[in-house]
Length: 621
Picture 1 (spheres, rainbow, N blue to C red):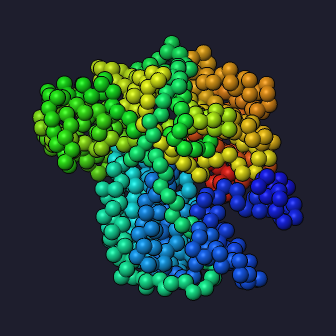
Picture 2 (cartoon, one colour):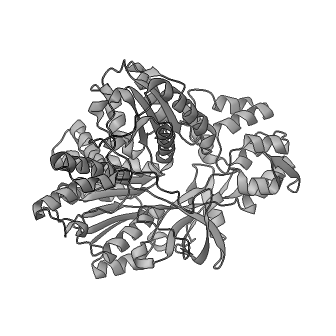
Picture 3 (cartoon, rainbow, N blue to C red):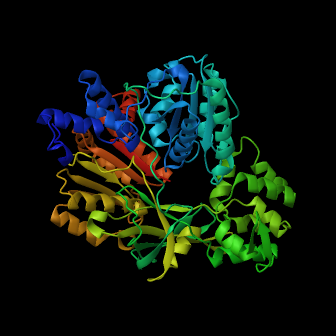
Protein backbone atom coordinates (compact mmCIF):
# COMPACT_ATOMS: atom_id res chain seq x y z
CA UNK A 1 0.00 0.00 0.00
CA UNK A 2 1.31 3.44 -0.89
CA UNK A 3 2.45 5.66 1.93
CA UNK A 4 0.61 8.90 2.53
CA UNK A 5 2.47 12.14 1.81
CA UNK A 6 3.86 14.06 4.82
CA UNK A 7 1.05 16.65 4.64
CA UNK A 8 -1.43 13.96 5.72
CA UNK A 9 0.64 12.61 8.58
CA UNK A 10 -1.00 14.74 11.28
CA UNK A 11 -4.55 14.28 10.03
CA UNK A 12 -7.29 12.39 11.90
CA UNK A 13 -7.64 9.62 9.31
CA UNK A 14 -6.37 6.08 9.98
CA UNK A 15 -3.22 5.18 8.05
CA UNK A 16 -5.00 3.06 5.44
CA UNK A 17 -7.41 5.92 4.65
CA UNK A 18 -4.51 8.39 4.44
CA UNK A 19 -2.82 6.20 1.84
CA UNK A 20 -6.10 5.86 -0.07
CA UNK A 21 -6.59 9.63 -0.05
CA UNK A 22 -3.03 10.11 -1.32
CA UNK A 23 -3.86 7.87 -4.28
CA UNK A 24 -7.08 9.80 -4.99
CA UNK A 25 -5.46 13.25 -5.10
CA UNK A 26 -2.29 12.16 -6.88
CA UNK A 27 -1.86 14.03 -10.16
CA UNK A 28 -4.84 16.35 -9.68
CA UNK A 29 -4.38 19.97 -10.70
CA UNK A 30 -5.33 22.93 -8.49
CA UNK A 31 -8.81 23.32 -10.00
CA UNK A 32 -9.63 19.67 -9.29
CA UNK A 33 -8.29 19.92 -5.74
CA UNK A 34 -10.41 22.99 -5.06
CA UNK A 35 -13.45 21.14 -6.39
CA UNK A 36 -12.68 18.23 -4.10
CA UNK A 37 -12.29 20.51 -1.08
CA UNK A 38 -15.69 22.10 -1.74
CA UNK A 39 -17.33 18.74 -2.29
CA UNK A 40 -16.06 17.28 0.98
CA UNK A 41 -16.94 20.48 2.88
CA UNK A 42 -20.48 20.17 1.58
CA UNK A 43 -20.67 16.53 2.68
CA UNK A 44 -19.48 17.49 6.14
CA UNK A 45 -22.10 20.22 6.46
CA UNK A 46 -24.86 17.92 5.26
CA UNK A 47 -23.91 15.31 7.85
CA UNK A 48 -23.22 17.64 10.79
CA UNK A 49 -24.20 21.27 10.15
CA UNK A 50 -21.79 23.50 12.00
CA UNK A 51 -21.86 27.27 12.49
CA UNK A 52 -18.16 27.64 11.75
CA UNK A 53 -18.70 26.49 8.15
CA UNK A 54 -20.47 29.78 7.47
CA UNK A 55 -17.05 31.38 7.68
CA UNK A 56 -16.20 29.66 4.42
CA UNK A 57 -18.84 31.64 2.54
CA UNK A 58 -17.28 34.00 0.06
CA UNK A 59 -13.89 32.30 0.24
CA UNK A 60 -12.23 30.08 -2.34
CA UNK A 61 -13.51 27.05 -0.48
CA UNK A 62 -17.10 28.26 -0.12
CA UNK A 63 -19.91 25.98 -1.26
CA UNK A 64 -22.09 27.56 -3.93
CA UNK A 65 -25.66 26.81 -4.88
CA UNK A 66 -25.99 23.93 -7.28
CA UNK A 67 -27.17 24.56 -10.81
CA UNK A 68 -28.69 21.91 -13.02
CA UNK A 69 -27.24 21.12 -16.44
CA UNK A 70 -29.99 23.16 -18.05
CA UNK A 71 -29.20 26.24 -15.97
CA UNK A 72 -25.44 26.41 -16.33
CA UNK A 73 -22.69 26.35 -18.91
CA UNK A 74 -19.82 23.90 -18.88
CA UNK A 75 -16.45 25.18 -20.08
CA UNK A 76 -14.31 22.19 -20.97
CA UNK A 77 -10.65 22.63 -21.87
CA UNK A 78 -7.75 20.60 -23.18
CA UNK A 79 -4.33 22.21 -22.82
CA UNK A 80 -0.75 21.16 -23.43
CA UNK A 81 1.18 24.27 -22.38
CA UNK A 82 -1.46 26.21 -20.45
CA UNK A 83 -2.78 28.57 -23.16
CA UNK A 84 -6.13 26.79 -23.58
CA UNK A 85 -6.53 26.62 -19.81
CA UNK A 86 -6.04 30.38 -19.49
CA UNK A 87 -8.46 31.06 -22.34
CA UNK A 88 -11.07 28.82 -20.68
CA UNK A 89 -10.56 30.49 -17.30
CA UNK A 90 -11.01 33.92 -18.89
CA UNK A 91 -14.34 32.82 -20.38
CA UNK A 92 -15.49 31.42 -17.01
CA UNK A 93 -14.62 34.72 -15.31
CA UNK A 94 -16.70 36.64 -17.87
CA UNK A 95 -19.67 34.30 -17.50
CA UNK A 96 -19.53 34.51 -13.72
CA UNK A 97 -19.20 38.29 -13.93
CA UNK A 98 -22.49 38.33 -15.84
CA UNK A 99 -24.18 36.37 -13.06
CA UNK A 100 -24.36 33.12 -15.00
CA UNK A 101 -23.83 29.67 -13.52
CA UNK A 102 -20.80 27.94 -15.00
CA UNK A 103 -18.37 25.16 -14.21
CA UNK A 104 -14.84 24.67 -15.48
CA UNK A 105 -13.43 21.21 -16.19
CA UNK A 106 -10.21 19.85 -17.65
CA UNK A 107 -10.97 17.20 -20.23
CA UNK A 108 -9.39 14.33 -18.32
CA UNK A 109 -11.36 15.15 -15.15
CA UNK A 110 -14.70 15.44 -16.95
CA UNK A 111 -17.19 12.61 -16.38
CA UNK A 112 -18.16 11.71 -19.95
CA UNK A 113 -21.44 10.19 -18.75
CA UNK A 114 -22.60 13.77 -18.06
CA UNK A 115 -22.27 14.82 -21.69
CA UNK A 116 -25.75 13.59 -22.59
CA UNK A 117 -27.32 15.92 -20.03
CA UNK A 118 -25.33 19.04 -20.93
CA UNK A 119 -27.26 21.90 -22.48
CA UNK A 120 -24.55 24.51 -23.08
CA UNK A 121 -20.95 23.45 -23.71
CA UNK A 122 -17.97 25.62 -24.60
CA UNK A 123 -14.92 23.59 -25.64
CA UNK A 124 -11.51 25.27 -25.62
CA UNK A 125 -8.77 22.98 -26.93
CA UNK A 126 -5.27 23.27 -28.31
CA UNK A 127 -3.83 21.18 -31.13
CA UNK A 128 -0.67 19.23 -30.41
CA UNK A 129 1.68 18.76 -33.35
CA UNK A 130 0.00 17.71 -36.58
CA UNK A 131 -3.66 17.69 -35.56
CA UNK A 132 -3.38 15.64 -32.36
CA UNK A 133 -5.21 16.35 -29.08
CA UNK A 134 -3.25 17.51 -26.03
CA UNK A 135 -2.45 14.71 -23.62
CA UNK A 136 -5.17 15.69 -21.16
CA UNK A 137 -7.81 15.34 -23.89
CA UNK A 138 -6.92 11.97 -25.39
CA UNK A 139 -9.55 10.06 -23.40
CA UNK A 140 -12.31 12.61 -24.05
CA UNK A 141 -11.48 12.71 -27.77
CA UNK A 142 -11.58 8.93 -28.05
CA UNK A 143 -14.89 8.80 -26.17
CA UNK A 144 -16.46 11.45 -28.40
CA UNK A 145 -15.30 9.68 -31.55
CA UNK A 146 -16.24 6.23 -30.28
CA UNK A 147 -19.37 4.10 -30.31
CA UNK A 148 -20.32 5.08 -26.76
CA UNK A 149 -20.74 8.76 -27.57
CA UNK A 150 -24.42 9.72 -27.02
CA UNK A 151 -26.70 11.58 -29.38
CA UNK A 152 -26.84 15.23 -28.37
CA UNK A 153 -30.01 16.82 -29.79
CA UNK A 154 -30.45 19.13 -26.77
CA UNK A 155 -26.87 20.42 -26.62
CA UNK A 156 -25.76 23.85 -27.81
CA UNK A 157 -22.04 24.27 -28.22
CA UNK A 158 -19.15 26.33 -29.55
CA UNK A 159 -15.48 25.44 -29.98
CA UNK A 160 -12.38 27.60 -29.65
CA UNK A 161 -9.28 25.98 -31.14
CA UNK A 162 -5.74 27.11 -30.34
CA UNK A 163 -3.03 26.16 -32.78
CA UNK A 164 0.08 27.14 -34.66
CA UNK A 165 -0.23 27.88 -38.38
CA UNK A 166 3.38 26.81 -38.86
CA UNK A 167 1.89 23.29 -38.84
CA UNK A 168 0.02 21.99 -41.85
CA UNK A 169 -2.98 20.71 -39.88
CA UNK A 170 -3.70 24.01 -38.16
CA UNK A 171 -6.21 23.61 -35.29
CA UNK A 172 -6.84 20.10 -36.58
CA UNK A 173 -8.27 18.55 -33.42
CA UNK A 174 -10.66 21.44 -32.72
CA UNK A 175 -12.03 21.23 -36.26
CA UNK A 176 -12.67 17.51 -35.91
CA UNK A 177 -14.32 17.81 -32.50
CA UNK A 178 -16.48 20.68 -33.76
CA UNK A 179 -17.64 18.51 -36.67
CA UNK A 180 -18.18 15.48 -34.42
CA UNK A 181 -20.40 17.36 -31.95
CA UNK A 182 -22.56 18.54 -34.86
CA UNK A 183 -22.63 14.98 -36.23
CA UNK A 184 -24.00 13.79 -32.88
CA UNK A 185 -26.90 16.21 -33.25
CA UNK A 186 -25.70 19.16 -31.17
CA UNK A 187 -26.45 22.71 -32.33
CA UNK A 188 -23.43 24.85 -33.21
CA UNK A 189 -24.04 28.34 -31.81
CA UNK A 190 -21.43 29.99 -34.05
CA UNK A 191 -18.39 29.06 -36.12
CA UNK A 192 -15.40 27.58 -34.35
CA UNK A 193 -12.62 30.00 -33.51
CA UNK A 194 -9.17 29.15 -34.84
CA UNK A 195 -6.54 31.09 -32.90
CA UNK A 196 -2.93 31.28 -34.01
CA UNK A 197 -0.03 32.21 -31.73
CA UNK A 198 -1.49 35.70 -31.29
CA UNK A 199 -4.36 34.08 -29.40
CA UNK A 200 -6.36 37.12 -28.33
CA UNK A 201 -6.95 38.24 -31.91
CA UNK A 202 -9.43 35.35 -32.23
CA UNK A 203 -10.13 34.46 -28.60
CA UNK A 204 -11.48 37.86 -27.53
CA UNK A 205 -14.25 38.13 -30.17
CA UNK A 206 -15.02 34.41 -29.70
CA UNK A 207 -15.51 34.92 -25.96
CA UNK A 208 -17.75 37.92 -26.62
CA UNK A 209 -19.99 35.73 -28.79
CA UNK A 210 -19.93 32.97 -26.17
CA UNK A 211 -21.04 35.41 -23.46
CA UNK A 212 -23.80 36.81 -25.67
CA UNK A 213 -25.16 33.34 -26.43
CA UNK A 214 -24.93 32.25 -22.79
CA UNK A 215 -27.02 35.25 -21.73
CA UNK A 216 -29.70 34.19 -24.18
CA UNK A 217 -29.59 30.54 -23.12
CA UNK A 218 -29.16 30.62 -19.35
CA UNK A 219 -30.95 32.19 -16.43
CA UNK A 220 -29.00 34.66 -14.33
CA UNK A 221 -27.88 32.89 -11.18
CA UNK A 222 -29.72 33.93 -8.01
CA UNK A 223 -27.69 34.98 -4.95
CA UNK A 224 -26.80 32.13 -2.59
CA UNK A 225 -29.07 31.71 0.44
CA UNK A 226 -27.59 28.53 1.81
CA UNK A 227 -24.86 26.04 1.12
CA UNK A 228 -25.36 22.91 -0.94
CA UNK A 229 -22.93 20.47 -2.46
CA UNK A 230 -21.83 21.46 -5.97
CA UNK A 231 -18.67 21.27 -8.04
CA UNK A 232 -16.55 24.32 -7.24
CA UNK A 233 -13.73 26.34 -8.65
CA UNK A 234 -11.54 28.67 -6.62
CA UNK A 235 -11.87 32.40 -6.56
CA UNK A 236 -9.80 33.84 -9.37
CA UNK A 237 -6.20 34.05 -8.28
CA UNK A 238 -4.40 37.31 -8.71
CA UNK A 239 -2.32 37.44 -11.86
CA UNK A 240 1.38 36.64 -11.42
CA UNK A 241 3.64 39.64 -11.17
CA UNK A 242 5.59 38.48 -14.22
CA UNK A 243 4.16 36.88 -17.36
CA UNK A 244 4.74 36.71 -21.12
CA UNK A 245 3.31 40.24 -21.41
CA UNK A 246 5.37 41.54 -18.45
CA UNK A 247 8.48 39.35 -18.10
CA UNK A 248 11.18 39.50 -15.44
CA UNK A 249 14.67 40.60 -16.45
CA UNK A 250 16.80 37.68 -15.30
CA UNK A 251 20.58 37.88 -15.05
CA UNK A 252 22.65 35.23 -16.81
CA UNK A 253 24.86 33.43 -14.29
CA UNK A 254 26.43 30.88 -16.65
CA UNK A 255 26.26 29.96 -20.33
CA UNK A 256 28.49 27.09 -21.37
CA UNK A 257 28.55 24.34 -24.01
CA UNK A 258 27.98 20.80 -22.76
CA UNK A 259 28.34 19.01 -26.12
CA UNK A 260 30.97 18.95 -28.85
CA UNK A 261 30.90 20.17 -32.42
CA UNK A 262 32.91 17.29 -33.89
CA UNK A 263 29.99 15.65 -35.65
CA UNK A 264 27.68 16.47 -38.51
CA UNK A 265 24.37 14.96 -39.46
CA UNK A 266 21.56 15.52 -41.93
CA UNK A 267 19.23 18.44 -41.30
CA UNK A 268 15.85 18.61 -43.02
CA UNK A 269 16.33 15.62 -45.30
CA UNK A 270 18.45 16.50 -48.30
CA UNK A 271 18.67 20.23 -47.66
CA UNK A 272 21.95 20.38 -45.79
CA UNK A 273 23.97 19.47 -42.72
CA UNK A 274 23.61 20.38 -39.07
CA UNK A 275 26.33 21.54 -36.72
CA UNK A 276 24.61 21.89 -33.36
CA UNK A 277 25.85 22.65 -29.91
CA UNK A 278 23.95 22.12 -26.68
CA UNK A 279 24.39 24.75 -23.99
CA UNK A 280 23.69 24.76 -20.25
CA UNK A 281 22.41 28.19 -19.19
CA UNK A 282 21.74 29.40 -15.65
CA UNK A 283 19.66 32.45 -14.71
CA UNK A 284 19.07 34.23 -11.44
CA UNK A 285 15.49 34.73 -10.29
CA UNK A 286 16.54 36.61 -7.16
CA UNK A 287 14.08 39.34 -6.25
CA UNK A 288 11.46 38.21 -8.78
CA UNK A 289 9.20 36.21 -6.49
CA UNK A 290 8.95 33.68 -9.33
CA UNK A 291 8.65 30.04 -8.29
CA UNK A 292 8.51 26.85 -10.30
CA UNK A 293 8.27 23.10 -9.93
CA UNK A 294 10.09 20.38 -11.90
CA UNK A 295 8.10 19.90 -15.10
CA UNK A 296 7.44 23.61 -15.61
CA UNK A 297 8.91 25.63 -18.48
CA UNK A 298 10.77 28.93 -18.69
CA UNK A 299 9.32 31.29 -21.26
CA UNK A 300 11.43 33.80 -23.18
CA UNK A 301 10.47 37.03 -24.86
CA UNK A 302 13.39 36.90 -27.27
CA UNK A 303 14.62 38.85 -30.28
CA UNK A 304 15.57 37.47 -33.67
CA UNK A 305 19.38 37.56 -34.00
CA UNK A 306 21.00 39.80 -36.63
CA UNK A 307 21.92 36.65 -38.56
CA UNK A 308 18.17 36.08 -39.09
CA UNK A 309 17.06 39.69 -39.67
CA UNK A 310 19.70 41.01 -42.08
CA UNK A 311 19.26 38.32 -44.78
CA UNK A 312 15.52 39.12 -44.89
CA UNK A 313 16.23 42.83 -45.42
CA UNK A 314 18.79 41.98 -48.11
CA UNK A 315 16.45 39.60 -49.93
CA UNK A 316 13.78 42.29 -50.17
CA UNK A 317 16.17 45.24 -50.68
CA UNK A 318 14.45 47.08 -47.83
CA UNK A 319 15.95 49.79 -45.64
CA UNK A 320 16.15 48.51 -42.09
CA UNK A 321 16.42 52.04 -40.71
CA UNK A 322 13.12 53.15 -42.25
CA UNK A 323 10.65 54.23 -39.56
CA UNK A 324 7.20 52.65 -39.60
CA UNK A 325 4.10 53.21 -37.45
CA UNK A 326 1.94 50.12 -36.87
CA UNK A 327 -1.10 50.24 -34.57
CA UNK A 328 0.09 53.50 -33.08
CA UNK A 329 3.66 52.33 -32.35
CA UNK A 330 6.63 53.63 -34.31
CA UNK A 331 9.82 51.63 -34.76
CA UNK A 332 12.47 51.07 -37.37
CA UNK A 333 11.82 48.22 -39.79
CA UNK A 334 14.86 46.43 -38.38
CA UNK A 335 13.45 46.67 -34.85
CA UNK A 336 10.02 45.46 -35.99
CA UNK A 337 11.60 42.40 -37.58
CA UNK A 338 14.02 41.70 -34.74
CA UNK A 339 11.66 41.99 -31.81
CA UNK A 340 8.11 41.71 -33.09
CA UNK A 341 7.75 39.37 -36.10
CA UNK A 342 8.25 35.66 -36.75
CA UNK A 343 11.07 35.12 -39.26
CA UNK A 344 12.02 31.46 -38.77
CA UNK A 345 8.55 29.84 -38.47
CA UNK A 346 6.34 30.11 -41.53
CA UNK A 347 2.55 30.12 -41.56
CA UNK A 348 -0.09 29.29 -44.15
CA UNK A 349 -1.62 32.82 -44.18
CA UNK A 350 1.72 34.45 -44.94
CA UNK A 351 2.61 31.89 -47.60
CA UNK A 352 -0.76 32.43 -49.28
CA UNK A 353 -0.15 36.19 -49.28
CA UNK A 354 3.38 35.71 -50.64
CA UNK A 355 2.20 33.34 -53.37
CA UNK A 356 -0.18 36.03 -54.57
CA UNK A 357 2.50 38.72 -54.32
CA UNK A 358 5.04 36.60 -56.22
CA UNK A 359 2.47 35.10 -58.64
CA UNK A 360 4.06 31.76 -57.75
CA UNK A 361 1.91 28.91 -59.04
CA UNK A 362 4.23 26.28 -57.51
CA UNK A 363 3.78 27.77 -54.05
CA UNK A 364 0.03 28.06 -54.60
CA UNK A 365 -0.08 24.37 -55.48
CA UNK A 366 1.68 23.47 -52.23
CA UNK A 367 -1.06 25.31 -50.33
CA UNK A 368 -3.86 23.37 -52.02
CA UNK A 369 -6.08 20.94 -50.05
CA UNK A 370 -4.71 17.42 -50.02
CA UNK A 371 -1.07 18.55 -50.13
CA UNK A 372 -0.52 18.51 -46.36
CA UNK A 373 2.53 16.25 -46.56
CA UNK A 374 4.24 18.49 -49.12
CA UNK A 375 3.19 21.59 -47.21
CA UNK A 376 4.59 20.16 -43.96
CA UNK A 377 7.87 19.44 -45.74
CA UNK A 378 8.01 23.07 -46.89
CA UNK A 379 7.35 24.37 -43.36
CA UNK A 380 10.02 22.09 -41.93
CA UNK A 381 12.72 22.94 -44.44
CA UNK A 382 12.31 26.69 -45.12
CA UNK A 383 12.70 29.83 -43.10
CA UNK A 384 11.25 33.13 -44.33
CA UNK A 385 14.43 34.07 -46.15
CA UNK A 386 14.39 30.79 -48.10
CA UNK A 387 10.86 31.50 -49.37
CA UNK A 388 11.81 35.07 -50.34
CA UNK A 389 14.78 33.78 -52.34
CA UNK A 390 12.97 30.83 -53.94
CA UNK A 391 9.89 32.82 -54.98
CA UNK A 392 11.03 36.45 -55.29
CA UNK A 393 8.45 39.19 -54.84
CA UNK A 394 8.37 42.87 -54.06
CA UNK A 395 7.02 43.76 -50.64
CA UNK A 396 6.40 47.17 -49.18
CA UNK A 397 7.67 47.27 -45.61
CA UNK A 398 4.29 47.99 -44.02
CA UNK A 399 2.54 45.27 -46.01
CA UNK A 400 5.23 42.78 -45.03
CA UNK A 401 4.85 43.56 -41.33
CA UNK A 402 1.08 43.19 -41.59
CA UNK A 403 1.39 39.81 -43.32
CA UNK A 404 3.92 38.32 -40.89
CA UNK A 405 2.84 36.82 -37.57
CA UNK A 406 3.79 38.51 -34.29
CA UNK A 407 6.89 37.05 -32.66
CA UNK A 408 5.74 34.52 -30.06
CA UNK A 409 7.64 33.70 -26.84
CA UNK A 410 9.47 30.38 -26.71
CA UNK A 411 9.26 27.81 -23.93
CA UNK A 412 12.12 25.65 -22.63
CA UNK A 413 11.77 22.81 -20.14
CA UNK A 414 13.36 23.75 -16.83
CA UNK A 415 16.40 21.60 -15.99
CA UNK A 416 16.70 22.30 -12.27
CA UNK A 417 14.92 21.92 -8.94
CA UNK A 418 14.60 24.95 -6.67
CA UNK A 419 15.10 22.57 -3.77
CA UNK A 420 18.72 22.26 -4.96
CA UNK A 421 19.53 25.51 -6.78
CA UNK A 422 17.48 28.08 -4.83
CA UNK A 423 16.65 31.30 -6.70
CA UNK A 424 18.11 30.02 -9.96
CA UNK A 425 16.67 28.35 -13.02
CA UNK A 426 18.66 26.18 -15.43
CA UNK A 427 18.05 25.35 -19.08
CA UNK A 428 19.42 22.88 -21.62
CA UNK A 429 19.37 24.60 -25.02
CA UNK A 430 20.10 23.09 -28.43
CA UNK A 431 21.70 25.89 -30.44
CA UNK A 432 20.30 25.42 -33.93
CA UNK A 433 22.80 26.06 -36.74
CA UNK A 434 22.64 24.43 -40.14
CA UNK A 435 23.25 24.89 -43.83
CA UNK A 436 20.26 24.79 -46.16
CA UNK A 437 19.45 26.06 -49.66
CA UNK A 438 23.05 27.23 -50.05
CA UNK A 439 23.28 29.44 -46.96
CA UNK A 440 23.86 29.30 -43.21
CA UNK A 441 20.85 29.38 -40.90
CA UNK A 442 20.43 29.85 -37.16
CA UNK A 443 17.51 29.35 -34.83
CA UNK A 444 15.64 32.35 -33.53
CA UNK A 445 15.28 31.71 -29.79
CA UNK A 446 18.25 29.35 -29.50
CA UNK A 447 20.44 31.86 -31.34
CA UNK A 448 19.28 34.58 -28.96
CA UNK A 449 20.05 32.45 -25.91
CA UNK A 450 23.39 31.23 -27.22
CA UNK A 451 24.61 34.81 -27.59
CA UNK A 452 23.88 35.77 -23.98
CA UNK A 453 26.98 36.36 -21.88
CA UNK A 454 27.36 36.17 -18.11
CA UNK A 455 25.94 39.35 -16.65
CA UNK A 456 23.50 39.90 -19.51
CA UNK A 457 19.77 39.97 -18.82
CA UNK A 458 16.90 38.24 -20.58
CA UNK A 459 13.10 38.68 -20.23
CA UNK A 460 11.66 35.50 -18.69
CA UNK A 461 8.52 34.12 -17.06
CA UNK A 462 7.33 30.77 -15.70
CA UNK A 463 4.88 28.56 -17.63
CA UNK A 464 3.39 25.94 -15.31
CA UNK A 465 2.68 22.39 -16.42
CA UNK A 466 0.53 20.64 -13.81
CA UNK A 467 0.38 17.42 -15.85
CA UNK A 468 4.16 16.87 -15.83
CA UNK A 469 5.04 16.42 -12.19
CA UNK A 470 6.95 14.00 -9.99
CA UNK A 471 4.50 11.70 -8.17
CA UNK A 472 2.82 13.12 -5.09
CA UNK A 473 3.49 9.72 -3.51
CA UNK A 474 7.27 9.83 -3.02
CA UNK A 475 7.44 6.03 -2.76
CA UNK A 476 6.43 5.59 -6.41
CA UNK A 477 9.04 4.54 -8.97
CA UNK A 478 9.50 6.65 -12.11
CA UNK A 479 10.73 5.83 -15.62
CA UNK A 480 11.99 8.79 -17.68
CA UNK A 481 12.62 8.81 -21.43
CA UNK A 482 14.46 11.92 -22.56
CA UNK A 483 16.80 11.80 -25.56
CA UNK A 484 18.84 14.88 -26.43
CA UNK A 485 17.67 18.06 -24.71
CA UNK A 486 14.52 16.15 -23.74
CA UNK A 487 16.57 15.07 -20.72
CA UNK A 488 16.27 18.59 -19.22
CA UNK A 489 13.17 18.09 -17.02
CA UNK A 490 14.53 14.77 -15.78
CA UNK A 491 17.62 16.47 -14.42
CA UNK A 492 15.10 18.52 -12.40
CA UNK A 493 13.12 15.42 -11.44
CA UNK A 494 16.17 13.57 -10.10
CA UNK A 495 17.36 16.64 -8.18
CA UNK A 496 13.89 17.15 -6.66
CA UNK A 497 13.48 13.53 -5.64
CA UNK A 498 16.93 13.49 -4.04
CA UNK A 499 16.42 16.75 -2.13
CA UNK A 500 12.95 15.79 -0.84
CA UNK A 501 13.98 12.29 0.25
CA UNK A 502 11.76 10.36 -2.16
CA UNK A 503 12.12 6.61 -1.69
CA UNK A 504 10.90 5.54 -5.13
CA UNK A 505 13.41 4.38 -7.72
CA UNK A 506 14.47 6.51 -10.70
CA UNK A 507 15.19 4.95 -14.12
CA UNK A 508 16.40 7.14 -16.99
CA UNK A 509 16.55 6.30 -20.72
CA UNK A 510 18.78 8.78 -22.57
CA UNK A 511 19.83 8.83 -26.21
CA UNK A 512 21.76 10.99 -28.65
CA UNK A 513 23.85 10.52 -31.78
CA UNK A 514 27.32 10.07 -30.29
CA UNK A 515 28.71 9.18 -26.87
CA UNK A 516 31.75 11.45 -27.15
CA UNK A 517 29.99 14.63 -28.24
CA UNK A 518 26.40 14.30 -27.07
CA UNK A 519 26.22 12.59 -23.67
CA UNK A 520 24.61 15.53 -21.84
CA UNK A 521 25.35 15.85 -18.11
CA UNK A 522 27.42 12.66 -18.22
CA UNK A 523 29.37 13.34 -15.01
CA UNK A 524 26.19 14.36 -13.14
CA UNK A 525 24.44 11.11 -14.06
CA UNK A 526 27.47 9.07 -13.00
CA UNK A 527 27.56 10.85 -9.65
CA UNK A 528 23.80 10.38 -9.23
CA UNK A 529 24.24 6.64 -9.81
CA UNK A 530 26.99 6.49 -7.19
CA UNK A 531 24.89 8.37 -4.64
CA UNK A 532 21.80 6.28 -5.34
CA UNK A 533 19.82 9.29 -6.62
CA UNK A 534 19.54 7.53 -9.98
CA UNK A 535 18.94 3.80 -9.83
CA UNK A 536 19.17 2.82 -13.50
CA UNK A 537 20.51 4.45 -16.65
CA UNK A 538 20.01 3.02 -20.15
CA UNK A 539 21.78 4.70 -23.06
CA UNK A 540 21.28 4.70 -26.82
CA UNK A 541 23.86 6.35 -29.12
CA UNK A 542 22.33 6.11 -32.56
CA UNK A 543 25.40 6.74 -34.75
CA UNK A 544 28.14 4.97 -32.83
CA UNK A 545 27.52 1.64 -34.59
CA UNK A 546 26.44 0.49 -38.03
CA UNK A 547 22.82 -0.07 -36.99
CA UNK A 548 20.99 2.93 -35.56
CA UNK A 549 19.96 2.53 -31.94
CA UNK A 550 17.30 4.71 -30.30
CA UNK A 551 15.66 4.95 -26.87
CA UNK A 552 12.62 3.01 -28.08
CA UNK A 553 14.92 0.08 -28.88
CA UNK A 554 16.32 0.16 -25.35
CA UNK A 555 12.77 0.19 -23.99
CA UNK A 556 11.89 -2.92 -25.98
CA UNK A 557 15.08 -4.67 -24.79
CA UNK A 558 14.05 -3.96 -21.18
CA UNK A 559 10.38 -4.66 -21.87
CA UNK A 560 9.82 -7.21 -19.14
CA UNK A 561 11.21 -4.93 -16.43
CA UNK A 562 9.46 -1.85 -17.82
CA UNK A 563 6.12 -3.66 -17.66
CA UNK A 564 6.82 -4.93 -14.14
CA UNK A 565 7.57 -1.38 -12.97
CA UNK A 566 4.31 -0.13 -14.49
CA UNK A 567 2.36 -2.95 -12.88
CA UNK A 568 3.88 -1.98 -9.55
CA UNK A 569 2.54 1.57 -9.85
CA UNK A 570 5.45 3.39 -11.53
CA UNK A 571 4.97 6.64 -13.43
CA UNK A 572 6.21 6.89 -17.01
CA UNK A 573 7.46 10.19 -18.51
CA UNK A 574 8.54 11.18 -22.02
CA UNK A 575 10.11 14.47 -23.13
CA UNK A 576 11.40 15.41 -26.58
CA UNK A 577 10.23 15.59 -30.17
CA UNK A 578 6.73 14.61 -31.26
CA UNK A 579 8.18 11.99 -33.62
CA UNK A 580 10.20 10.43 -30.82
CA UNK A 581 7.15 10.50 -28.56
CA UNK A 582 5.16 8.51 -31.11
CA UNK A 583 7.96 5.94 -31.48
CA UNK A 584 8.19 5.54 -27.71
CA UNK A 585 4.40 5.18 -27.44
CA UNK A 586 4.45 2.44 -30.09
CA UNK A 587 7.24 0.65 -28.22
CA UNK A 588 5.34 0.95 -24.95
CA UNK A 589 2.20 -0.49 -26.52
CA UNK A 590 4.19 -3.43 -27.90
CA UNK A 591 5.68 -4.03 -24.44
CA UNK A 592 2.21 -4.10 -22.87
CA UNK A 593 0.95 -6.49 -25.57
CA UNK A 594 3.88 -8.87 -25.18
CA UNK A 595 4.37 -8.89 -21.43
CA UNK A 596 0.79 -8.21 -20.38
CA UNK A 597 -0.65 -10.81 -22.77
CA UNK A 598 -3.12 -8.22 -24.12
CA UNK A 599 -4.45 -7.64 -27.60
CA UNK A 600 -3.90 -4.32 -29.36
CA UNK A 601 -7.18 -2.77 -28.22
CA UNK A 602 -6.68 -3.78 -24.59
CA UNK A 603 -3.10 -2.46 -24.64
CA UNK A 604 -4.37 0.82 -26.04
CA UNK A 605 -6.91 1.04 -23.20
CA UNK A 606 -4.19 0.19 -20.67
CA UNK A 607 -2.03 3.13 -21.79
CA UNK A 608 -5.03 5.48 -21.98
CA UNK A 609 -5.85 4.56 -18.38
CA UNK A 610 -2.27 5.35 -17.35
CA UNK A 611 -2.60 8.76 -19.02
CA UNK A 612 -5.96 9.45 -17.39
CA UNK A 613 -4.55 8.52 -13.98
CA UNK A 614 -1.60 10.86 -14.52
CA UNK A 615 0.89 7.98 -14.56
CA UNK A 616 1.90 8.41 -18.22
CA UNK A 617 2.88 11.99 -18.97
CA UNK A 618 4.46 13.52 -22.06
CA UNK A 619 6.08 16.86 -22.80
CA UNK A 620 6.58 16.67 -26.56
CA UNK A 621 7.09 19.41 -29.10
